[in-house]
Length: 97
Image 1: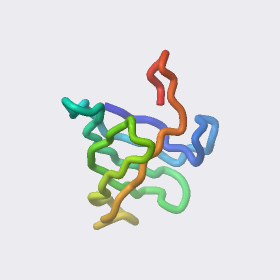
Image 2: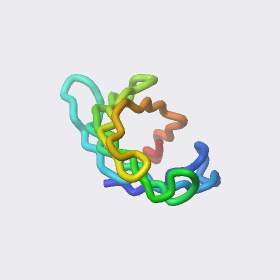
Image 3: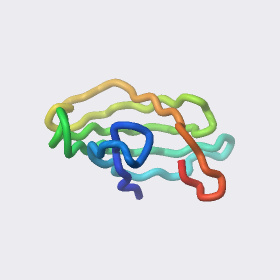
Image 4: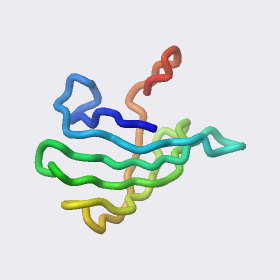
């Protein structure tokens, strides 16, 4: 389960826009990857009060990963499309990414 800060930039000192809430689970025998379900919940800015929902497979060792946008609320009601994920940094000691 996750409930992580959603910030304007990659650092935690960036302006807080909301939170990334959901879960991920290991989902691969042959390749390291996760099943991801995410809701990006906005509490500031243009999209305050809205959320966008993402669902998909995240093969984390790939440089860029694609996951489906499956809906949302308020400004993102009936949203469809895809999201691209890219790892900004990774600490092998702590597991933080």
